[in-house]
Length: 76
Image (tube, rainbow, N blue to C red; front, side, top):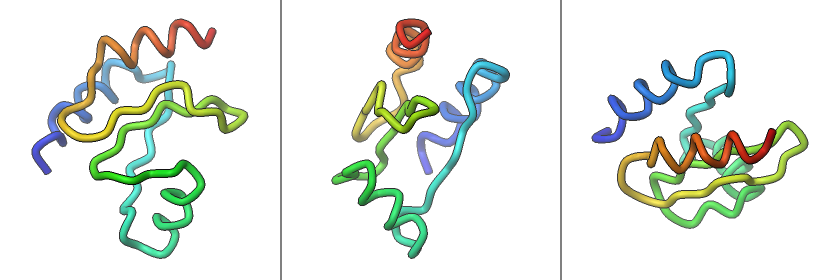
């Protein structure tokens, strides 16, 4: 996975502010998550509020850390 180092770094940066879940959208449980959040392309990065609302969505590429930070800050 080309984005793995970026995701790892973002996970480290956001420790204590966000929880990360890596989901294999091809597994049965991953398909349920992908359906729930209308995932149509891979990779898809989502920032989801505790009540399940999608606060940020990015399809493809490496995660945009600055945009995720802004979305996380705006949600507070």
